[in-house]
Length: 286
Image (tube, rainbow, N blue to C red):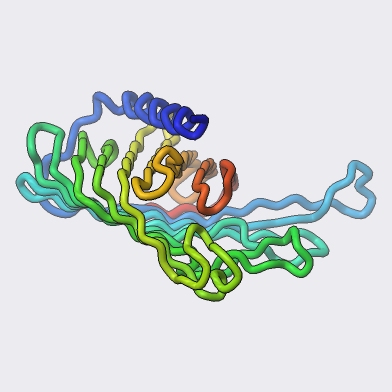
C-alpha cells in the first residue's frame, strides 16, 4: 500500500509540474525536430594537512548526453530520446568508483485520434555500460555489468501529447523482458531472473510521462516518470522510476546541473533507491 501511495504522490506531483506548461503552444510543423546537450560536470573538495576541521580530498566527474529526435507528419508523430549518463569519483586512499551509469533509448510512435490524444506504440531499452560493485563486502562484490541487468519494454496504448515537451503515454498491455548473465544467476536469483536462467518475461501496465519547461530565466526543469505493474507477479508492487533534472545556465558553455532520481523495484532492492548529483562544468547545446 505504501508503494501505491508513493506512486500516486509522484504522479500527482508530475501532473502539477505539467500544469506549468499549460500555455505552451504545440508544434504543428511537419518534419524532424532535433536537439540535445552534452554536459561534463566536475566537483571537488581539497584540504591541506594543516586543516583542523577534518575532511578527505575527493573529486569526481559526470558525463551526460541527452538527445531528442522527433518527427511529425500529418497525424503521425514519432518521438525518440537517447540518454547516456556516466560518473566517477575518487577519494584519497581508495580506488576510483562508479557513481552513475545509465544507457537508455526511448521511442514512441503515435497516430492522432482526436485533439491531443493519439493511438500509440512505445519501446524502451535501458542498461549500464560498465561493471558495478558492492564495496560493503571485502573483497568487493560484482553486482552488475553491461546487459546484466538489461531491460526491454514495448506495447500499444494511448498517448496524450500537448507538445514535444509535455506528454503522457499509458500502455495497459506492456511486455517487458529482463536480461542478465548466468554469472549472476548461478547461485540464485538476480533482478527477478530465476537461478540458472538469463531472462525473465513480464506482462503488465505501464505509464510514462515527460515534462520540460523553464521555471526561471536560464533555468530549465525536466521531469521523467515511469510506472510499471506486472500482472503476472505481485501487481500491487508498482515499479517506479522518477527523475528530476535542473539545468542552470550561466552562459552558452557553462552551467550548474542538479539531478534527483528515485527508483523502486523490488526485483532489485526491497526499498526506495535515491541518488542526487550536483556539479558545475561545461555544457554544449545542439
